[in-house]
Length: 217
Length: 103
Ligand SMILES: [Zn+2]
Image 1 (cartoon, rainbow over the protein chains, first blue to last red):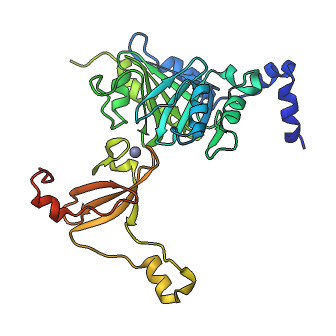
Image 2: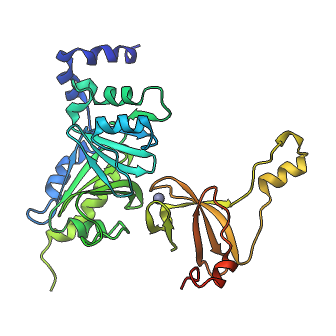
Image 3: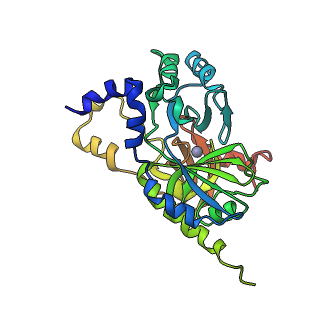
């Protein structure tokens, strides 16, 4: 079958660009809408496709937890925390569940070695390391009105007093489950599952619409 | 809408949670010894308490962990949130001790 031949194709570096060109990100069909719906200097939305994402479940106090932490550059200890290393950034999803996020090129199919390194760090210990790169896509919502757009459809306290840059929370946005990571004072990264990407993209565009119009006094 | 304090994540909207029914229903020690009626009672029969009721909840779109809650079924007041495996808090004792009396 054609599918079983795929791993061999990806292992050939000459094929990597061909395969990358063939890929479609979950919200690629909305890229023009994102560009035209963004309001310069106010709020902008774009998709950052194909980030490498790896799900980890492990007891962070265990030996395996320490080994995984040495690969990721730490495992966050509590809700909201984000651990940053050279190779990847790790978000807290639960007391024993973490999401490792890294650039596309960290993925093993593109010459990286992150997934294998994590897989080997876990070894035979209880827990799991799963390549979730295709599970979610990434939206970046930025600008001085980004918080206002989010507040329409997310019930978390997003005030800078309560939600600091460098914090990530698993929650609901527009009634769908998503991870919200505040990467800068006016910049948010949102990780919706692939099947929700088009819905959330259009939902956010709708929330941005009012900021394209002149303010009603 | 209830505002539920997840033991891991803090206060979140009720929509992030799912309900898991009555808490502290122990799995039968020897399920094979149960007759049909006893098995049906274990599976389906639950208390219908008016007042403080111990129940299970899961933070589905947050940390995905289960926990227990003591909720007044009349007022919807959440009296206590406690971890899986912990015994049901005795609210009568807490009311007597000045430390435990929560306002
Ligand atoms: Zn939680």
